[in-house]
Image (cartoon, rainbow, N blue to C red; front, side, top):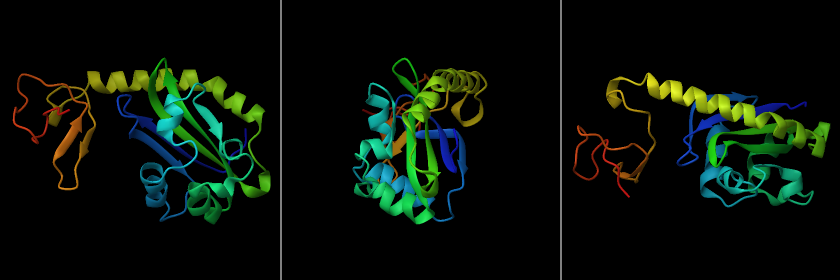
Length: 186
């Protein structure tokens, strides 16, 4: 299945926020912030969080916009300025958990992704999900340092850099006061 650019991200399955590993190909310098700004601050077609909750977990921008990608902010501000005409996005899942997300871009001269492209990509997503889950398990098993041997976690911070949510489980050595590292908060 030909594509011209891509973004591949492992995710924290509790939040669907991107973690490592990451691979980005053929995204022009300066567009990374536009990409994430559109993903987290603008309602648009097929955001990762929506794909993670959808029945299929995969879609193209052309199909999602009924053949009018210009209806999408992501298309107007990220894809079109780089010469891309369509994208196919997918949540990489195992059961109900999303272990990664991906976004493949196709240059406008190639035409949109086809239903065959969608089914081809969908056929490899389960194996990719199992591989990402296994890699995350291996990382947790070998985690050391600041986490004290515990699994990696995701923390959401307020504008003043205080913790508002964490996926890290408390341990007996975790601080107990709100806003301190390692303290899960609702």
